Image 1 (cartoon, one colour):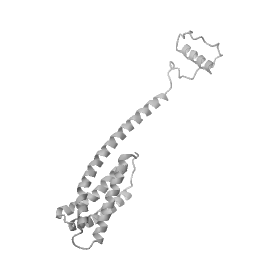
Image 2 (spheres, rainbow, N blue to C red):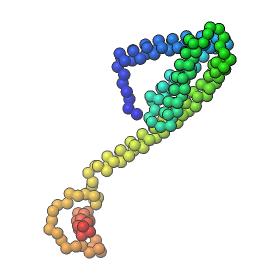
Image 3 (spheres, rainbow, N blue to C red):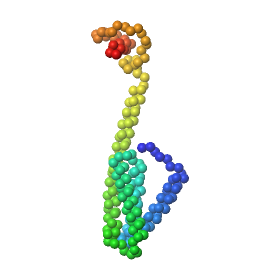
Image 4 (cartoon, one colour):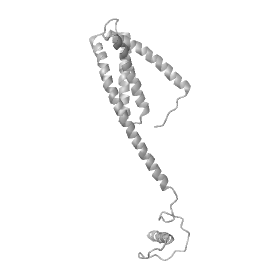
Length: 196
């Protein structure tokens, strides 16, 4: 995968706006978690799980080549985005006070599901990176072999095509054994010319 360089200005915008968006999302999700019945520290951590999954999945999406691991990361990314957006919307739309038991159940189920997804994502990413390294090493080995094939052939190899023009001798007989490398090349050239 090619390395992508981001300018300092773009980086500052991305980090600044991203931090602001995460802070606003954090506030809404923490309030929703508190209204769902989670304790003070659990409510403070719950948004980190939801939006943290978005950050982790995004990192995998942008660091892997196309393949099953990247598609899995995309699926987790969009699942986490749906949960985050739904949580922010529920925070705004639901009446003040404790939330419906169904909403509280969803809030309670998110952390273990996220833990499982993140663990699986880490394993999938590690395997995909290992496969990419193997493929890259094989490509480099093949490239090395191809560059060796492009090197000039030695005088003793039959691939040498720089044979001086000479009058066409009569076809050589099969049992006519060449005495040196030059004769071997001429012998091979006669065979190839005879074969057309």
